[in-house]
Image (cartoon, rainbow, N blue to C red; front, top):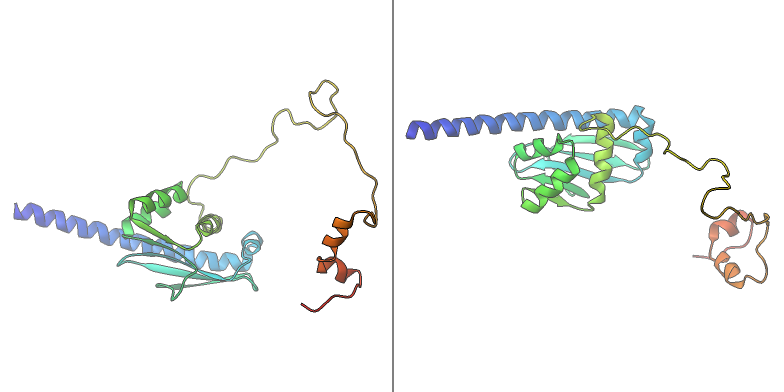
Length: 205
């Protein structure tokens, strides 16, 4: 009985060690891949519009964080936990982290495990989808969406037999608001961009 128990413990330790090594490798690739992508990939750079810190970690296991610079549209990364991350996904074990991060539906997997208590998501949950989108541009984990194509039966030309409004009213272009639209004029006075580009005086903020 003791031999069986010892064997199970050894197998569990070996499994935990393999999961820890796998997670550390995955986070390293994701970390440095995103850094390189922020230098050379225009689609990735276009999505870095805020300065914030994101962390992914496992309790008692590997951790990595990313620092996003919205002004320079660049990313830097370091191993370990962040001092004060704006957003963090913290798993209770490396095995859970490796399974969820490599899942084809990682977002759903993380949120399900969050309900079960094996994941803690701290910060704005919308950042999870944003960060996942960036990661997929570096490592295409999971299935890609269907290819974009035109919907069948698209309305590209006038069809007299179609059911619907067949007349589209086009108003003539105007260069100035109607003086009788007092509400519109009152709203315009609050638009500093409109007034400034027209050379109108602006009050102090």
